[in-house]
Length: 157
Image (cartoon, rainbow, N blue to C red):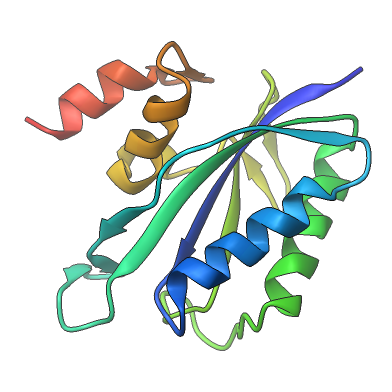
C-alpha cells in the first residue's frame, strides 16, 4: 500500500536553487515512488535555536508531495543519503546547509523513534514548511494539528 509523504527541502549554502533542483531530481528517482507536486521556491530568513537570524544566509525552501511504497524508515534513509550526496555536513544543530530534506508527514502515521518523529515535531509552527505545502495541497491536514490553512492563518496573525 502506498503512502502520501510530505518532504520539506531547504538550502542556504552554495547555489541554493541548484541544490533544491538536484535534490528534487533524486527524489523523482526514488524507487516505488511518484513525485506528485512541488511548490515554488520560497525565500526565508535563516532559523537558529534563538529564532530568526538575518545575519545568516537566507534559505530557499520548497515542499514536495510524494506517493511512495517505501516504508517510512526507508524513505528517511533515502532522504538522509540524498543529503549526504549533495554535501550536507552535520557537525552542529542549526548550522547552515547545502541541503536539508525533512520528512514532514507520512500518510496518517504517528511515530516516535530515536531517529524519527512523524509528523515532524515542529512543522506546525514553521511557515517555511506550511506555506509551500498549502500552495500545492490547499486542503492538506497535518496529523494531530489539523488543517494547514488554519495553522498558516494562526501563525500569520
